[in-house]
Image (cartoon, rainbow, N blue to C red; front, side):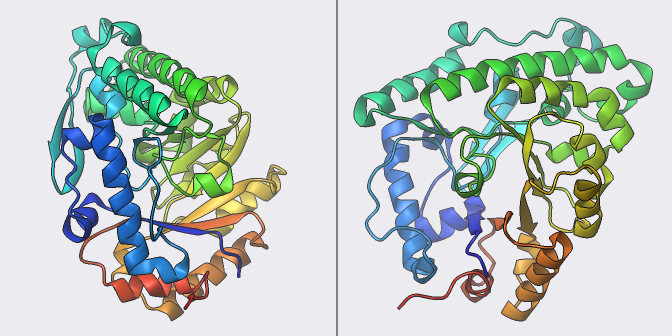
Length: 352
């Protein structure tokens, strides 16, 4: 079986087993994070090094934020949401609950004038000065995710009552995404590692948008309200990918396949792989690179036989494993190490 596999952990795992605190300093204090990152990669090696995970003596690297956790908050914070940091959890975005008047005045921030973005810029300069390079792992939050953070559940009423308001939200979110994306591509060859670290194996140069919240809407609504904005992003960057961590990607795959320049899809655990493959076949897109996610909840109780059966089913659904990648993301502190090793052993032989 091919070795296209990756795992990543919830902050609670890192906090318990590597002593990492995910307070504000982890994200905005570059020298500290570079050292935290070394500790994290060393901890991976100590527990799972026999499967080629982690590094025994990791060298410092010019990492901006982290590709070892999922932590989408920066874009929301730039647009005005409050963010709460804690030692053993990912940053929590508090919904801004913008009212109609606030949405009507919403603008994408001028990054050059933003004190928050300047904290990011100062890290970029530090990393360039120390390493001569930057590897961005800022989470590229998707447009609908940002709309939800700004408006909350009222957004679902807006679909019917005030579509122009939805457009106003998405316009601001897209302008911000374009501005940040262009700045990141100017300094880093990889910009999507903070969405999913498997991308560094699969398609390093891709712009991968996070469509987590799209799991809550229909394909018709996606096409009506969000396709336009994903298309803008897809046309702006070298190639495009869509992360859909929900268990129903098949319900919106036809809309996703309308996006130009789409080269990569990340398929949420529980999605119907046969239906997704059928859609790819019907649209002549067997060239698509696909990452199939395994449920971290299921991994808590899964043995090797269960993982192998699920993986074989995925390969059977797509007809080949040539362009298939596999990952389990968000493994928490209560997952037994033996279950994680069972997952890895399906793809890689243990090294002595």
